[in-house]
Image 1 (cartoon, rainbow, N blue to C red):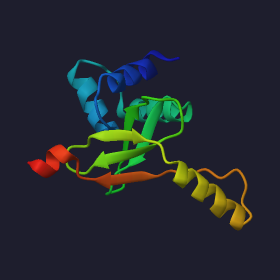
Image 2: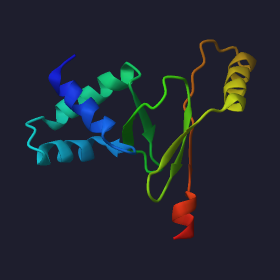
Image 3: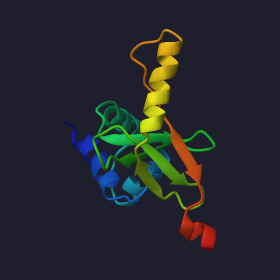
Length: 125
């Protein structure tokens, strides 16, 4: 694995929530890294393709990234205010996606589900 990909992986491992590529890039540069923005995007794509990181689209369509906590299929419950994310399983979603595929003659069905809301801490503030 490339050193630059490992640099991006380490930055995500040290983060507590989802981060944009631009945010990761700015953080790495402020720490003295010579990494380029294109390299950050390539590293994120490679890490995503290998299943090592989670990727989700925010309400406004921006892709954000986080180191995977688990290696099983899961979904995310994400706070719109602070970005806190909780990995959740959704067996009902799994069954529904498979049933929809079967009903319409599709095979090898995959899906992505992200649920957005306001966490208890932000709601109390």
